[in-house]
Image 1: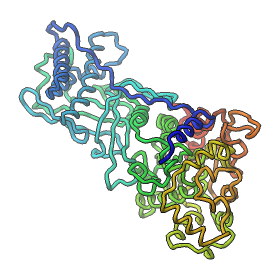
Image 2 (image 1 turned 120 degrees about the vertical axis):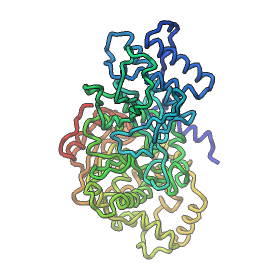
Image 3 (image 1 turned 90 degrees about the vertical axis):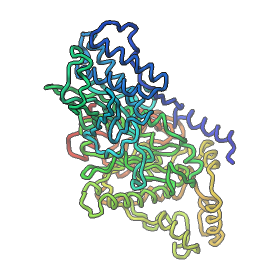
Image 4 (image 1 turned 135 degrees about the vertical axis):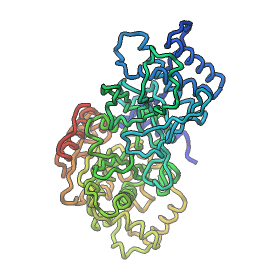
Length: 583
């Protein structure tokens, strides 16, 4: 059992040091709903809506599922107010719009709570004694209807991980859709989230202010439907004869997922050989943020040490807000346990990338699957580099003084070492962008934090036994860095590591273009100019076509505004044109 005081010290050292920053809570709150009117005694139509809405609130407080019917009635009565410009000075129309939006939000919450609203198919309501099914229409999504498992109305949220929130008012209400992975969708995360905009539509819309209440419930016309729009791909809807912008919140799904995530970055570091539902059987997973889309260029994000996929939240937030990005690119993510050596994680990525591409495109008809971009931060850059280089026997010779065939080992050990130490570059990858990558290591790995961190990594008994058998059967064959114990990721980040030095000399595949984005936040006697963890000299890639220095600490290099701007320029260069640099 890991000593908790040691773990606490490691956390304090990392987050208080120049490589990290203090944890901040990710807050997700329910929407602020319209309060029932204190006085709705008049007999006009809006007052009738006020009474219906107030009664629906009362029923909800009493846990009576018929509140769903009354929230729907209030939304139906105010349907035309949803298309009125929000700047209107008419207080009655403004109040109708407020009631309409709150009724829709309440409908999402209570409809799912009582099993009346199925996001895949429709809403069941009872009006005038009749059971009516209101269909749901999904418009503009790359997702299938069966992917819509749960809807969450967007309210107030907060996170320190995003510098901007991309949201705007408009027709409908913004939602976050949750989708759970099915067994036949192995290249999806356990839970996917994405943005949607919900609107109640009626092809024969009455005026919400002048028409009488009873005239609204002519169910024989069957003109009502709930429409869910993809705000990434649909910008306006027709309201009467006018195109109106839809409400959208592109940042909400990111904050929602941040606020609901389980586990932390330390479990993947301290127990790199552990398995579980979050990382899968192998401990590493490559997956798509959206369903695979033929003809779009995959951009694969790879996180660094003591990190996870959420480290790319700022970058993804910025990319999703850029016009043209989703038309030309698709985001994939590689997540791996960071206590494991980058060579082992690189072998996993190599295998899974090829498996994924063959599964999606078995006939080889999509040329963009041989045009993959890797974007990697910190140690993730070393994982990425192993995808575009040829190993030869350079890596093996850095740790052993005998050829691979001359070393005595079990067949299982031989297979695993062969996959780790001997590889060819992937033909799938055409460009790599390094963010603060320690190509020649980091002095931090050899300091107190590195020594403590490396000592805290847990090694399962079967792995220890396999390693001991290999060393015992081959005395004086292996270098000290692999002889004394199973190397951790921090061991191989020490500048003196022979394996790291060999990896820096590997030749890259002809035709692959690389770029470096480097942190130059400060100057110290030991590191020189650096981001506080990785020196500028270590982060420099000798083969890079472009190099950009940014004023940012190590953890912020991938999300600094200058870095985002540079990455967007690289994507624009890669694609040719069509991606704006402004949101």
